[in-house]
Length: 135
Image (cartoon, rainbow, N blue to C red; front, side, top):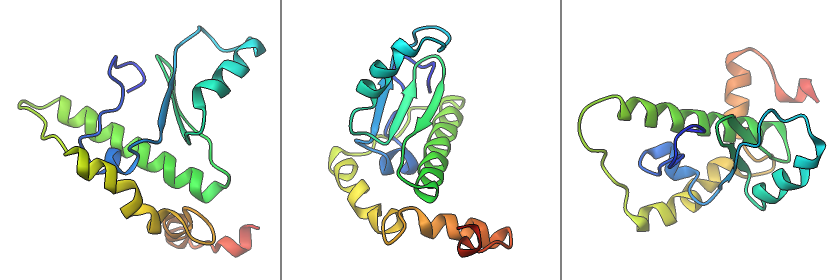
């Protein structure tokens, strides 16, 4: 999605969860110049997700569980968009009303004492790890 002119579309479940949370930063070449740092921060603004045009995906979250959950959701949204673009037919749109409501409706799964913790804890359990043992 970083290389697509229109970027991430909000026409699948996962992208709808991220509605209103994605910012973009135009490609300035290989990022080795520290002078780009303030422009990256300005592009991110108050969003947790930054799609670096012609480069890749970035998330900025306060904790590891939330960063993992946000990045996983973003990656899944991109995978579904790429898959649907590869098949014939027109994509089904999601109404503006549903897009406006979806982030708040999914907030209970992404918030709590440790934002993103519910999904992150499930992943750790599958790996036989307890979060408490990591901190």
